[in-house]
Image (tube, rainbow over all chains, first blue to last red; front, side):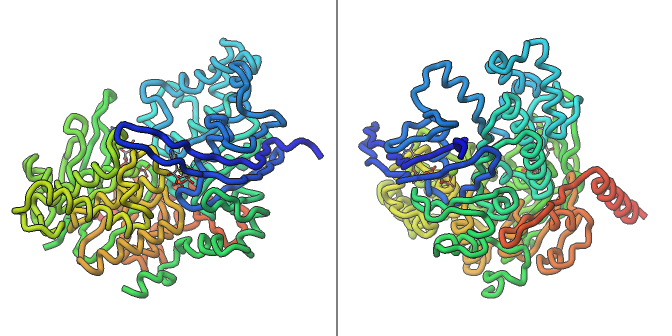
Length: 275
Length: 307
Ligand SMILES: Nc1ncnc2c1ncn2[C@@H]1O[C@H](COP(=O)(O)OP(=O)(O)OP(=O)(O)O)[C@@H](O)[C@H]1O
Ligand SMILES: Nc1ncnc2c1ncn2[C@@H]1O[C@H](COP(=O)(O)OP(=O)(O)OP(=O)(O)O)[C@@H](O)[C@H]1O
Ligand SMILES: [Mg+2]
Ligand SMILES: [Mg+2]
C-alpha cells in the first residue's frame, strides 16, 4: 500500500486557558482522538454540527495550530516544525479555499496580481520564471472558466461566484496536491454552485487532485465526495463511503443531520403543516 | 396598509467607471404574518434591496433613480437620519450577509448584545419588561437577562458564560446565532435576514427556522428572508420572489412557485440542487445556451408588459 497523502493519527486539540484583561477563560477541548487517512486522488468530506471542531481540524492540518496530542502527516511528513523553507514547500503542496470569497481577496489588487503573487513566492519551487507569470495566470483563469478580459479587474467588479473561481484559480496556481475546501460554495446560488462543483470534479480528473471538503450541505458532500466522516463534539462518530453513510447511517447523530435537511418540496414542510 | 411596500425601485451604483444600474424596477409588498423568501443569482441585487429598506447604502455611491420604499406608510428614502436610526434595531431588525461587519472583535459578546437591547428599549422599554423609569443599572440588568434567555432559546448552551467571551472564541455558527439574537432582541415588526443560516449546520438551521416561524405566528411580524437555499424557502416561507439581474422574474405563494415554476430561470435553479438522499451523475449549472434562453424569456416578458 502506498503512503496516504494525508494521515491524521490520534489528533487532539485543547484551546489553552488564557488570562485576559477581565478574567480567565478555562481550557476547552475541541478535538479528541481523530483518525483520518486520505489517499491521493480521493475526495474526502467532513460534516458536523456548528462548533463540532471542523475549522479547528483544518487549522491543525495546515500546521497553523499545534496539536495537543497525536499528529498530522502530509505525504509521510509531519506538518509542524519544518523550518522556514520546509514550511514554504508544504504551503505550496497544500492549499485552502475559504468560505467567504470576498474576505479572502485583497480589494486593491487586480486579479492578475492576486494570482501572480502566489507565483512570486512559490515560482522558484515550480520552475516558473517571472516572464512566464502572465501566461500562467491566463491558463489558470481559463481553467476556471474566466476569459482574459478579466485579467486587470479588481475583486469588487466580480460577482460572488466569479470571486470564488478566482480563489480556486489562486489556490491552483502553485500546483497543490491537496485542496482543502471550507464551505466553498455556501455563499453562492445553486446554479453557480453547480458550475463550481462541476469545475472541481473536472480539475480532479485532469490534475489528480485530492480534496478535503467541509460543508454543511450534505447534498454537496454526496455529489462531490467518495468518503465522508461525521464529527460530533470533536470526535469522529462514523466514517465511510458517502452512499453507505447517508443511505444507512449507523449513528443517531447522522440520522438527525439527514432529517434536518430542508426539502425543496413545500408540501413536506413540518412548519407549514403546523401553521 | 402594507408593512413594507417597495414600488418600482431603481438603484444605480457609482464607481470610477461610471454609474451602473443595479435594481431595475423592484416591486415587493410584505404584509404582517408573511415570510417572503428572496432567492436568485449571485449579484442580482438581493442584498442591496435589503440594505435599501433600512437605508444603509452609502450616499456617496448609491443613487436612487426612481420608485419608493414605504415602511408602515413612512417614506424610508426621505426619512431623516434620526428617524432611520430609531427604526434600525427597533422596528426593523436586520441580519447582514457579511458576519464580519456585524460583530466588533474587540468587545465581549455580552456587551454587544446588551447595547443592542438598550438601543431598542429606548423607544420600547416594554421589550425588557420595563416602564422606562428604572435606573440605568436596572435597565442593564434587564437587558443582560433578556439576552441570556434569548441566546439559550437559540440553542447556545451556557449562554451566561458565553456572554463574557469575545467573538473569536466562537465558531462561525455560534457567531451567526448571536447575530440573529441581536436582530431579534428589539422585537422588530419587520425582520430582514440576509443569508442568516448559511454558516449553520442543518440541525441548528432547522432550530432557527422554527424560531423565526414561531415569532411570525406569535407576534405577527413580517419577514424578508434572503437565501440561496430553496429547501429553506420551501420549509419556512409563505411567499417567494425570484431575482435575476436586478429584476424580480417570478413571485407568488411558495406552494405554487416551487411546485410549478413558470419562469425558465426558476426552473434552472430547481434543477441545480444536489440532494443527499441519492447519487447524482450531473448537476446542471447555467451554461451559455441556457443563459441565452433566460435572457430571451425576460426580453419577451418586458415586451409584453410594454405592449
Ligand atoms: N481561539 C479559540 N479559543 C477558545 N475556543 C475556541 C477557539 N476557536 C474555537 N473554539 C471553540 O472550539 C469549538 C470548535 O470550534 P470550530 O471553529 O472548530 O467549530 P466548527 O466545527 O468549525 O463550527 P462552524 O460550523 O460553526 O464553523 C467551539 O466550541 C469553539 O467555541
Ligand atoms: N458598493 C458597491 N459598489 C458597486 N457595485 C456594487 C456594490 N455593492 C454591490 N455592487 C454590485 O451590485 C450588484 C448586486 O449586489 P448584491 O450584493 O445586492 O447581490 P446579491 O444578489 O446579494 O448577491 P449574492 O447572492 O452574491 O449575495 C452586484 O453586481 C455587485 O457587483
Ligand atoms: Mg468553522
Ligand atoms: Mg447578497
